[in-house]
Image 1 (cartoon, one colour):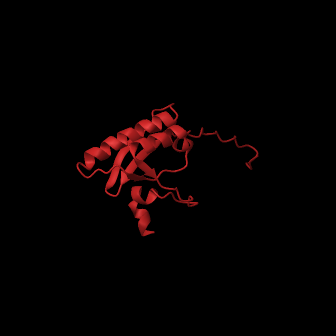
Image 2 (tube, one colour; image 1 turned 135 degrees about the horizontal axis):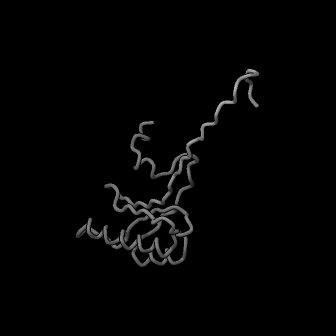
Image 3 (cartoon, one colour; image 1 turned 90 degrees about the vertical axis):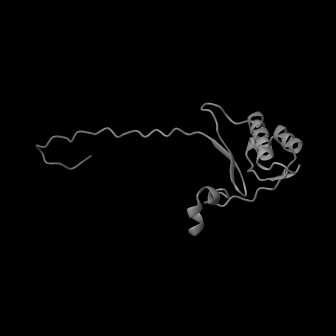
Length: 125
C-alpha cells in the first residue's frame, strides 16, 4: 500500500538490477617469502582428494625449484579442516611428499589466519 492523492497515477515500478556473483574457489599456497601457487578451480568442478593431491604435487615441484639445494624432505604444512584436506588419500599423499601437517587452530569468528598475508592493511587495525 502507498499514500497518494486521489487523482494521481500509480508510480511505475523500476525493475531492480539483478547482481549476479560468479563464485569460484581459489586455493593458494604460501611460505615465509610470499605466495607460491595460486589455483582457480574450474567452474562446475568440485574439489576432492584427488584434485587437491594433484595441487600438492605441483606445490612440491615449485618448492624444489624455489629452494634449489636447500630443499629438505620435511615441510611444515598448515591447512584447514575441509573434507578434501582430511581425506585419507590426501593424508597419504602428504606423508608421501614429506609434508608434516600442523594442527589447525580454531577459527576466529571474523578473520582467517591467511587474511593478514593477503590483506596487509588489516595488520594496522
